[in-house]
Amino acid sequence: MKISFSAPSLPRTGPLAVGVLSGGKLLATAERLDKATDGAIGRAMRASRFNGETGQSLTIMAPSGVGASRIIMLGLGDAQRFDDLAAQALGGRAWKAMAGTGDKAAHFAIDPVNGSHLKTADIAANAAYGALLGSYRFDKYRTREKDDAKPSVRTLTIASRNSDQAKKGFARFEKIADGVFFTRNLVSEPANVIYPATLAHQARRLTKLGVKVQVLDEKQMAKLNMGALLGVAQGSANKPRLVVLRWDGAPRAKNKAPIAFIGKGVTFDTGGISIKPAGGMEDMKWDMGGSGVVIGLMKALAGRKAKVNAVGIVGLVENMPSGTAQRPGDVVKTMSGQTVEVINTDAEGRLVLADAMWYCQDRFNPHTMIDLATLTGAIIVSLGNENAGLFANDDEICDRLTAAGKSVGEPVWRMPLGDAYDKMINSDIADMKNIGGRWGGSITAAQFLQRFVKDGVKWAHLDIAGVTWSNKEVPTVPKGGTGFGVRLLDRLVSENYES
Image 1: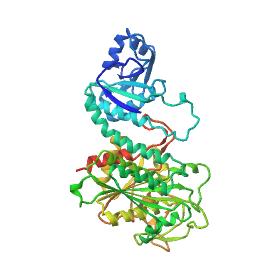
Image 2 (image 1 turned 90 degrees about the vertical axis):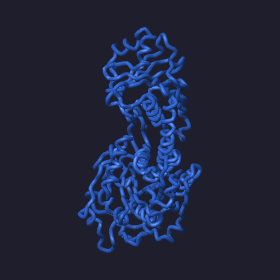
Image 3 (image 1 turned 60 degrees about the vertical axis):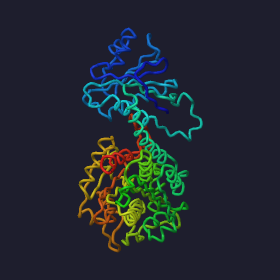
Image 4 (image 1 turned 180 degrees about the horizontal axis):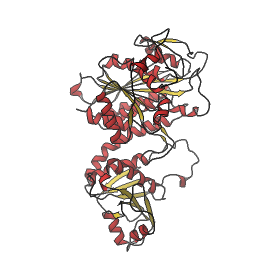
């Protein structure tokens, strides 16, 4: 979909979306339309339950007096509570209401909202951003879908005051959306299309944006003694990869330590010898969600020319059962030199991250390291599908992630760490075991990862198992791969780490 901006105007064709505040208070364009249609807006509202509350909508078909094929009234709710997230959701709802009308072009009138802290140009930019995010579809494998089941709208015009400012604000949002869409695409692809080699190939595409990309193969990782990552991969015919992405957006700080993002990239997870039940195993194509977020984030940072030095590292493996697969009871030696007794081969993501995190610190010496992983089902039991689990060794990075998540609508919830939990992963024959028992599974997984964080490095772990894929639709996030984490980490960087 193409989004453009214009000065306030009424279209001659196609659907037109307008805003209405709580209590049925019409904004400027809606008032203008009410007069032009001899009171049709007011009559329609009085004949319905629509009164401008958040989430409400009302459509009037082909009203006399205007050229629009239909007028779509959207509830904004209370003006004082109308913020950037509300504007984005409004844009997403506008897109959904217009997309399947049969028209190829649609218009959305953005008016000043007295009582909101947002300027009109900011509302317009955020609404356009929300519409763009909500327009995402992964339909490349639908070969027989009928035209009337597809979105018809190809262009959306956002009409507002200060349209040049709105366009400028949207330009930044558009680059972030590019990263979100890239992540959603990667997560949505089936495992016969996305496996370690092909996911590494997708990451290489970022070189066009100025990202430096290096791919390590199995032999190179063996020389680095990455026994934990390689142990997970040894049962698969698809060989592992480690992808290193660098964005040097602050050249004056060239010798300054970067911020680093590490992603779990299990492109398909059968559980290995500790095999998963068949029901729902198809979902394990998105067990590489953490790596997808890191790659999408690096695309967003490079796309908007973020003034930061950032490193992204993704460990890519496929966890399969075979005659060469890792067995429960095996002991592996990690790059750090620490040994791990593998009790359950389905607790594989932490093994991949252990070597990826150590490699990152050993090579780049980051001041802050954040890992993302669809790591445990236990975090879904704790937090459902509403929040990502947050674990951290530093209060400041925890507070920053929490604030960034709240500001973009990708919430995180801090979970505990502690010695009592750490003792649960002690092994009788090795330095540690890869699971800690039935209870507190997401916490003991985080404790495992913390053993691979060097002294002095600020570290946070985001368990995104419950938020990487969605079976319900919200205005800016269609069903399927969510891209959760790209906007969160982009905001974290922009508010705290850019020079």
